[in-house]
Structures are given as C-alpha cells and as structure tokens.
Length: 476
Image (cartoon, rainbow, N blue to C red):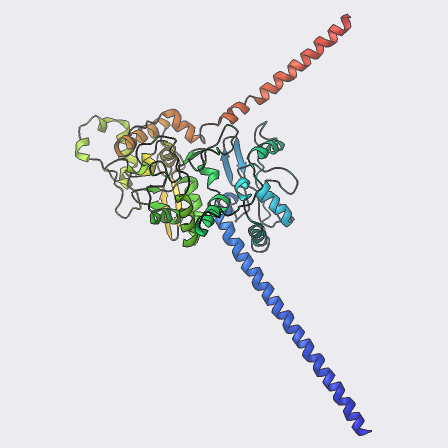
C-alpha cells in the first residue's frame, strides 16, 4: 500500500514537473516571440523614420515654430496658398483614424480618407512609385512614433474654380501613374537605388521638371529646370553646360549634404529646406546613389546656355571703380552699403566661405535671375550639421536691414550680374515685383481669374435666352 502511494505520488510529481516545465517553456517562447515582435517593430519604425526623412515630410508638414508634422505650413502655388495638413496620429485633426489603405491612398493617389482629393502641392505623383513595404513602414512610423498633435491647420481656400477639388480627377487622369517603381534591369543596383530615391522619395521632379499649361510635369523635359513661384529649381540633368555634368561626384555629394560648394553653388529657398530637413540625413551610400542616377539622365540644354552657370564672373578691381561712372550708379551704392561688408568689395566673399563669392556662383551666373532676386529679397537660412548659414532678408521691413525697394533690388542685381555674373541678363523692377509677390502667375491661374466673370456672363445669357423664349412663346 505504501509502495503504491509513493508510486502514485511520484507520478503526480513528475506530471507537475512536466507541466511546470512546459508552462515555463511556453512562457519563455512567448517572451521570445514578444521580444522578437518588439525588435521587428523597432526596426520597422527606424526604417519608416528614415523614409519619412528621405521623403522630406517635415519640411512641408511643419509650420514655423509648430510641432513636427502638425501641418499649417503655407505653400505658395501659382493658384494660391495651400496649407499643409496635420499628419500626426491625432484622432481629431490628424491621421489617427486612417487605416493603412487610407494612408496609402493619400500618399500614392492623392485621396483623403473622406474621399476628397489633395492638391499636387502634396507630391503624390512621385510617392505613387513607393513600394508597398515602404508605405507599410511609413504607416507604422507615423502611427507609433510620431507625437499626436491636436492643432487644426488653416483651411486651404483657393479661388474659384480651383477650389473644386473634384477637378483633380481630370488632372490625375493626365498626370498620375499608379505603377510602383520597377528597377531597370539594364542599370546597376546603385543607379536603380538612386532612381528610386530621386524620383519617388525625394520627388526631385516635382521641383526640377518644368510645368506645362495645365501645371502638370513636362514629360519631354525631365529635370530640365522649373519655376517655383519666387524661386527657380535649376537644370539637374547630366548636361555638362546647363546641368550638373560639369560637377564632380564629390562636389555633388557635398552639395546634397551641406548645400555649399565654393566655386559652384550655395543652396537657398526650397533647396535649403530640403537639405536642412532631408538630404543631409541620408547615408553616404544613398547620396552616392542619387549622384549615380543623375549622371545617367538624359542631357538637356533647352536654354542654349554657352557656358556652365558657375563659370561666369571675376573679382572686381576696386581701383578701377574710383571716379568711374559705375561708382555713381545706384547699384554700386546699394552693393557697397548692403552687400560688400559680407561678400567683400571685390565680390570674393570670406576665405572660410561663410559668405560665398559672388563670381563662380550659380545664382549670379544663371540665365534665370529669380534665385538671385529671391535671395536678396527673402535672405536664406540653411542648417547642415552644426553649421548655420544665414543671410538677412533685404526685401523685408521686419529685417534688421533697411528694406530695399523694387528699384533698389533691380539696380543691385544688375550691378552684381554685370560685375560678377552673367552680364547678358538684366533685371527689371517688374521682375522684382513679381518675385516679391510669389512669382509671375502661371497661365492657368491667369485664365482662372476670368472663370467667375465668365460664369456670370453665361448665366446672364441663359436667363436672357429664357426670357426671350418665353416672350416668343406668348406671342404665338
């Protein structure tokens, strides 16, 4: 009897031991699976953060002084001001209730969760090329790592007829492709990576490709340069004169990372924002990939420029200015009073390049003077690593400088162009006024202004015809 008891007890204890062991193993497996899941989520969030940086989301979706991605940034377009949306996971004002399918539709098709169409100031025509895996990583990042901000951005209110978002259906039919990026089997892995970064994530074509009459990208001139309101995104094709073909690989990488290549160019305006918020944070491998892609783009020189824009100009011989007619001109007076202290009287800038040379500078050597005018009017601020590059806005009364008039800016621009840059270019007061107001309105915008009067005239004609028809009917 006692043996039977001990035998039974042994069986029970063994069973308990096995059960405990199984439970512990199960708990260990669950812990391991949980740790693996957390590690996978962390890796996915890290990937999403890098993709969001490469896509430059913060630049447009963060207003000055606002919280990251909370929207409200005013985007000047030829049709009016468009305010960016809140893309934090806020339920009230952001994308907190967006499913991944909703998120994908907004990102790649330009359609919000409520079914309304986004304006192409949001570069969904470029993001349409994003892979499903990258869209998923972005979705996980924005919903799990971005702080929810409940602020509501200003509502975009474009004038009629551009406020009719349904018209975007027609525009999308013309310009939106729903085909994700597919690697070119005839190109290297490096070039394909660069093409994906440049065309999908960094959406270079959104700025550097000219627009046609419907404000869609001019497919025959990819990356050949385009107007951006007050600024001009230059030709970045492989052409050795009009594009970046005359740059070395090292110079191109340096420019993308810092915005400064002495003797070539200094980034300002939207490009300075892209470097501050996006490009400087890309890996060296990815920057090299973008350069490799640009190197093999179709060379285009539709402007007919005879020499590269960075090859113009020479230092000014100050001794030749004394008593000359130029010294008596307003352009020299504005330059000596507002520019020479930083850029030096001979235009050579500082030896450490904190203030760049005005000769051998793309802004003064370009055939389109918009960037020179805009830099004088609006100044520039660019952040790269621990280096801040700053120039005051001479066209703003809010600046610590005296505000320059349109004539002052035209005069000093012409002095700089003729002494240090492309002497074949002349700036007028009208051009300065257009740049100050946000750029010369596009044809579509100019035509659109007549839409309301045209509709009113049409209604009057319809009413008049109706009255005429009724009177004619009564006489019979």
